Length: 287
Image 1 (tube, helix red, strand yellow):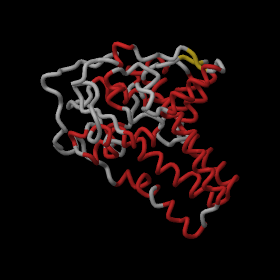
Image 2: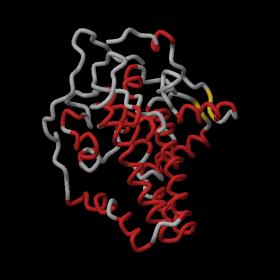
Image 3: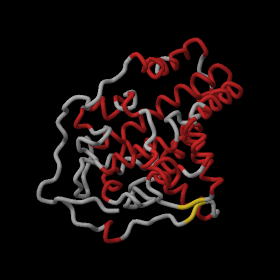
Image 4: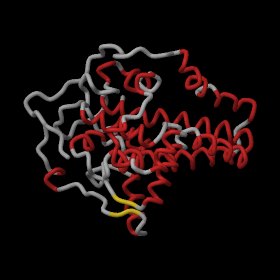
């Protein structure tokens, strides 16, 4: 799917207009308190095992968000079995970013109205809003079932979407059993905070800082730092220009580790039909 372009009037950096909905700070206390838990490391210490748990859980969960929640559930950029579909969904739930149906439905809405008044996390409403404000806004707590009917037909996905606490609690308990209090504080809480903000940067930083290789009606940009932090999601202008590809780093030098892992999984027949980037898209005129 190619975004509509306007080479004559490319979009400019959005001017903040303030949050479109009020933020409920009182109900956001658990989210804000979550960010303070890693500081308990001054009491628990930071063990090598806890760091290893944190790094590994970050990598696995980021893959489940980028490959699963984003490229598979939101964009259907490849095919897989129902069993591995569940694995991706459960791994995404462990990232503590709500359920797969909620996530993908909101992302589809973002693409339909990117950087317009109907975009749920455009920087036009301010960097804070696009980065995290919309996440703690109660206006977006429900799942738009109509936007995700293709996956809402699976009862196991609906179950995970309704009970999205299962993943975080499972990972938190596992981190504690494997690494003690340090494993919990660093392996789960600290790695989750880093994971959150790396993911959030795609909505904020990747719409404000970077290069625009392709002309799109939104402000998406390619940002190498965001790409490295998120397994390839930072090639955001590429993605907004051609959304259905399983690969977001269109050039060989645009590192996209999510696509590399998907390629290996395709060799093992775990996934299939990875949608490529057509040459006409790759070589489209510069804006």
